[in-house]
Image (tube, rainbow, N blue to C red; front, side, top):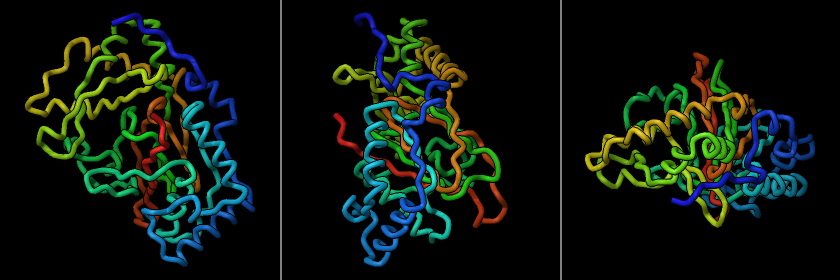
Length: 310
């Protein structure tokens, strides 16, 4: 393989740089919150299908243009966007779902999640065993390692936070890539080779697929990493054991993903909606403890979006 170069651009950031910048955050005012509430009420009144929500179904006259600029930052800038102050309080459960779907429709096209193709998932502790190979990360309260979801953008709306924990943390895949290229070019080459991943769709061969951790698409870096899904792929009868070089590369990646230079924490509160570009950002979640009352337990709404990027 030819010499691997570092990648420059707005997605190459360190935690202190992004924390000091405000261009990736959007705080709603009273008038914009009223727009959102009106859009939710209009969709509820018509009984429209959430799966088919579009920008036209969810008009946001003054909030919409600001959201468009934030979406451009997510897809072509730093890869991170955060909306604060969405009017979740007082909405029904269905109203919260419609809010998430309607706001997300201004960022990208909804994509089905998982084997059943549902466009919306609630991230809640269902008591699922996180050590079971086919358990999904949104079904338990244990911490989740750094990973990228398999769509252009992942969005999370916080309906209720946990009693404690559940901190969302994000890292620039580009910055970590550049650090590995600079310090361990031998492992950078390994990360550009095919790796086996577990889709967790069952036990058959179609549950396993190969792709590199790092790739270049039109000169742009795209990263795809999920240590839990790489390790669980070892259950596949036809999947070869990880090589020593692959294991070392994962150790280095995992260490850098926990390096304070790169880690930006986001303590998502009620009404916060996070958008992340999966090709240039990895994200994780710390373990959490929940409230005993069911109506107070942690609930985030997760959406996957296609933005039409090549």
